[in-house]
Amino acid sequence: MSKDKLYDNQEFRQVIKHLKKLKKIELGLDVDMYGLKYKSGDDRLLAGIRLETIQDIYGHSERQMTKGYLSKLQGVQMQEIKDKAPKF
Figure 1 (cartoon, one colour):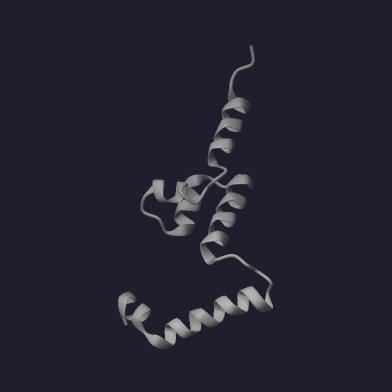
Figure 2 (cartoon, helix red, strand yellow):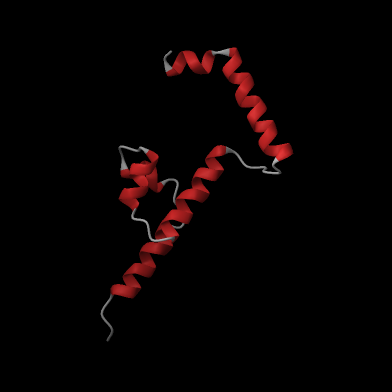
């Protein structure tokens, strides 16, 4: 079944709807899956995982797409510059 046909499938949409309700009510999580992806990306970045590795994990062909999920990237890059810059 193609991806387009899968998303058009009524049963598939019902399963997704149920999972969203389960996540919100039973697990107490009021975030969507993309919110978790942003959090996961930032956590990995702050743990020292390289941007290229996160890009591979997410399956992105373009680095720019991965950067969109990393809200902490600029801060991490600035800290790296400070840490590696020569001391005067």
